[in-house]
Length: 186
Image 1 (tube, rainbow, N blue to C red):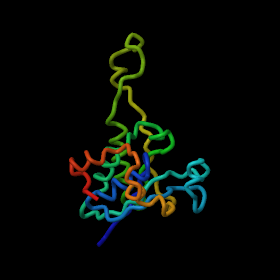
Image 2 (image 1 turned 180 degrees about the vertical axis):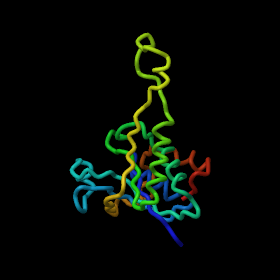
Image 3 (image 1 turned 90 degrees about the vertical axis):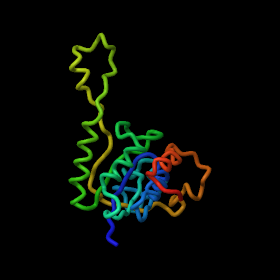
Image 4 (image 1 turned 120 degrees about the horizontal axis):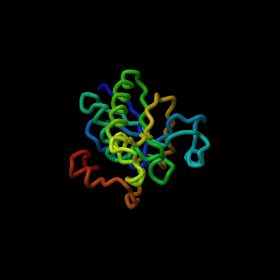
C-alpha cells in the first residue's frame, strides 16, 4: 500500500492524534515535535519554548482513500487558524509538508483560508470612514504552512495519551465528529 505523510500542529497534540487516528484513510499517527532547532527535544524543553518546535502529529495516510485537502479541512474544523497560538496561548497551528508535490496543495489551501474570512474592524461604527473599508477588513491567518525540516516523535507516554487517559478533558467534540461521520469509533 502506498502512503504519504503530512504533519499538523494546532491545539493539543493529544487531541490531534486521537482525531486523525480515527479518520478513514489515515493509517498511522504519532505525536511529536515539528521543526525543532534542537536535536532530540523533550516535552519539558518544548513547553519552556527552548526549541522553537511546534507540538503536533505525523499523519500517515492512503491518498487513494483520502486526499490532502480533506485532511486540511478536518484540521481547520477543529482549530481556528485566525487565533494566534491556539489553546492556552502556547500551541501554534500549522501544516508541514515533506514532499514537494504537497506544497502546491498546501499553498492553494492556505490562499483559500487567508481569503475566506472577512470581519468587521473592531472600531465603533461612527469611526469607520466608509462602509467599503469595513467590507475589506480581513482577519490575519496565523496558521503556518512550511516545509518539514524535522520531526521527532514524542516520548511514549505522549503517544495515544487520550486512549490511555480517557477522563482527560478535551476541547474537540469527538461525539459530534462521529455523528457527522468525520471520524470512526475507536
